[in-house]
Amino acid sequence: MHKNANYGHARYTSYLPIFEIIVMRYVVLDTETTGLDPKQGHRLIEIGAVELLGRQLTGKTFHHYLNPDRAIDEEAKKVHGIEEAFLADKPRFAEVADDLWLFCEGAELIIHNASFDMGFINHELAQLSRPPLNSVCTVRDTLKEARQRFPGKRNNLDALCERLGVNASHRSLHGALLDAQLLAEVFLAMTRGQQSLIDEESEAVLKTDQAKNAEIIGQVGIVKHVLKVISATEEEVAAHDAYLGGLKNALWLSGL
Image 1 (cartoon, rainbow, N blue to C red):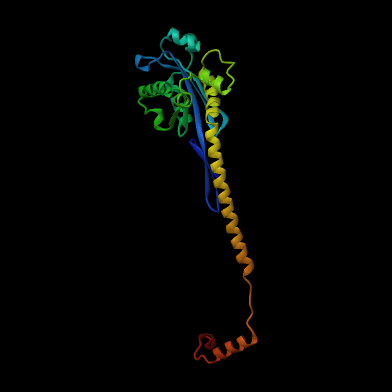
Image 2 (cartoon, rainbow, N blue to C red; image 1 turned 90 degrees about the vertical axis):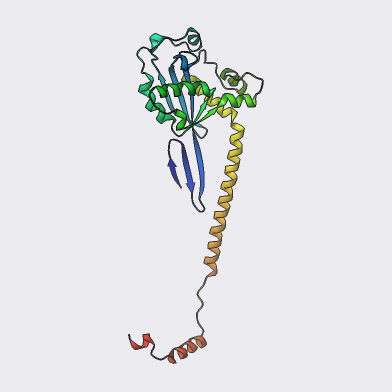
């Protein structure tokens, strides 16, 4: 058994015959901003993300508050409670862009209302003449999935936490890292049935491979026990000697 891992996924490969399991790497991400529209000059002020490997939180996180170099809309402050004074000594986006890129590269991003967060992130990257973040990762929008699964119902993060039994009692205001952690639990709850099907299919394939392995090993074992040495009879030895005696100019008799 050997393991190849990169930021996007880990590969676990067994031999006889080759069987490969790909463990997906997810980055669950959320942001807070100065307002609603980056095209109107609004900026990111917080990015939070957590890592899932398969369906397990790894404990790895990405979290930064950012100095937007501009005022924060009062309506936005009511949502996240972040003030300009708190951000005065925080880094600019340009200072954390490389780390964000590396943290997300190769993963599938899990975002609630992805067009909003990705719109801000990609706008910030464009200001640095960099390509969009989704050029190095894929994006999965849990808001779209929730609307398909729960049509006609409220599908914001608070409602999903309540509906799916995720404890959000410690959440009084929005915060990027806290919301990313809650969204990770919501995502796992929403996809639990899907993953069960994947697990069952993977287990079935693995059992089939194991059966084939046992069959191959069994066949080799049978051949091993069937093979045996059979000695020539006295008559066969005499006939062989007579045949050799009748040969002329045999190389092994001339001594080369």
